[in-house]
Length: 340
View 1 (tube, rainbow, N blue to C red):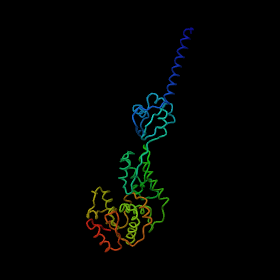
View 2: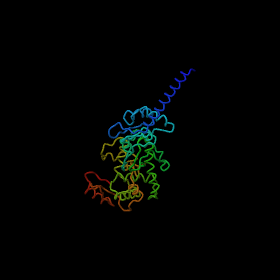
View 3: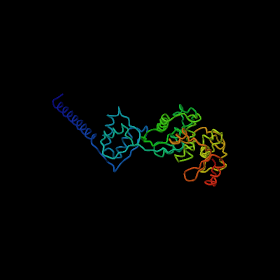
View 4: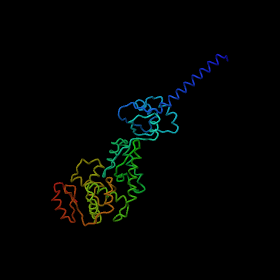
């Protein structure tokens, strides 16, 4: 090789090395340079199974990073030990590409605060969580109809009705529906482990939760729940029908017949859940009871009451005899047909 060619090759190599060094320097600078190309705050959703390339494109297109190529090269260097976690991400300040990728790697997603009220049926709970954007209604309903998470405690369970514990939850976006449902059931399991005790008349877990679910639907007044639980225990001991309107409603809902009110004809609707036609407790819970109703089912007030009727102000009149009850019905609720 002539000296001129050697000189040219050396110069070319120097130029290439210089260009590479400049590119490396620029990347090192850009990867650590905060940037914010959007107004206010921005929320970006990463779906489960979404390709990383699409996520990176979306970040660049929406102004979270300035240079698409820089972000993709940074991801290429990091991706061996990196998984982009699904969920909703919030961006509200300038961030460097490496910071953005670290946020995705750690799964620093938005948490949603969800309160599951007492007394919801599984269909209503599925609707609540799907409405919060935490998953799809069909998938939630499918998960709530699978009794596997509670089967060791309740081998007879056909669904998770009664076992979705009413509480306020902080749920990470991107958590799948099955995992969310297990969180709800695990909360019930934890409560039961701390509070379980021998129930009156030897009722088992399923019967306790079933009774508590009826109490939950009968009153929103916490002070009355032990009284109402006591009424139902007394009626069970005497072999009387429980005659609980909420069980009729549940039976009608299961059959797709409920229209917002119950009629006298509905009281004769043939269903194992209808306590106007079947003695004893229904075959399972009619909703998810809260702590107060569960405690009432475990510790009912011991009285001689066999009847109660709504006063129309959120409280009830309790009676020991049918004569007393009929007088209370005439006084408070004759027009609505109070029956217990």
